[in-house]
Length: 444
Image (cartoon, rainbow, N blue to C red; front, side):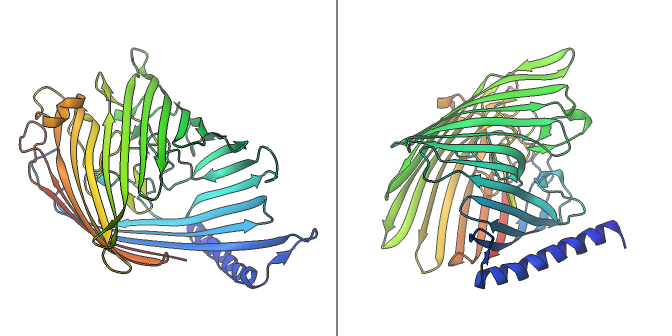
């Protein structure tokens, strides 16, 4: 028997036994020697996505279509020994068919997809009645701070040690330190949250990359063009957020410092700033539950380099995410690859959704994109000149409708139309791009 077949059979046996054990626990929790009740919980998550793209290559004049099928499946097992000790593990599978273009980079392996360990960690909680309750987490875990502007594990856990403490219900402290699998990359940071209205957060996060290669759109890429000596990034972050029954908002500003050393003769000192603001109204329109939002994102540049956290939020379990279904802008890049010299993506967007019928949600969004850094001759940024943008990057219209049955099942259709600047000074390809996407999610 081949090693892969043996591993797959072994993992299947573990999952099967966990299912049987979980059913047993659901009806009759085990009691240990101290009289404490122990329990086991099982979660299953399945996501399917069929995507039809009309045009995905804006670095050439060719109109390149693509049809892609994606599947994500995970089985998570959580064992609770008492109210203070918990162990969790998640086995996952990610598959993509029809992708033969580097534009479809993903945080999961694209080749020979198989079951892999997405998370596996231990949670230990201190005495909940103590004056300063604390929590310790150790292992491969999901880590996200704030909006994910600087730190987000992108649905693929990070191996880390993490500590959280709550001081007198007035403020909390969250610190962590981790390493990436198989390469010399260290990630660390901390966050202080003041529990008032509005909530105030201060964060400092650091990256140290000594692997010899940089990351391409958040994915480690040991290709010659990404060869480096070292890359050190330090981020300082301030966030203000709040909400009540009718609104919620978040304002975030971050500063990137540090140094990139490409070789003994070439280096660059970081010094870029990013700003993110989101505001949402929540209420009823025409007797239907509705939401409306305004989004503004600015990402600064310096000497051809953009504000670029390696682990800004880019991916979910079933593909790329960002501002716009198709363009999917993040802090430093987008799903559609920009021509050389254009970086630091800024976004101004509006979104609206409503629930006109039971179990049904529909909505729309419109986004304007611009670049903080661009070569001379780029399309004029228009209104974006107000905040210092250098070039127009086009706009996108999104429409969606979703059917959702409780929290266990949802199915929906997303439509995105990206409209590039109508001048070849930015993109060689000036044709609109379209995305038609069918998504199905189920879990229990």
